[in-house]
Image 1 (cartoon, rainbow, N blue to C red):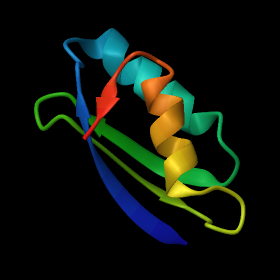
Image 2 (cartoon, one colour):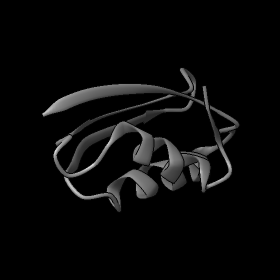
Image 3 (cartoon, rainbow, N blue to C red):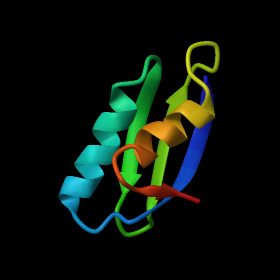
Image 4 (cartoon, one colour):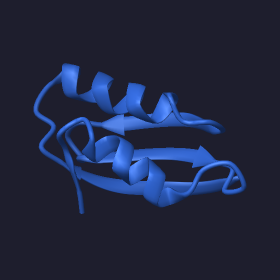
Length: 68
């Protein structure tokens, strides 16, 4: 398993946290998701043989947030 921490801009409430969490949860082999509203981060573990980090970034961006 790989670990990733992404900086996510544009989150302002718990609904935003839920949206990012759900977007990552929908991806195969993504686990241990923690989205920090104050720190503006999303951390998670993933199996890179099933999903690429770019796919995770796109899933978050598709929800309307910026991954920087």
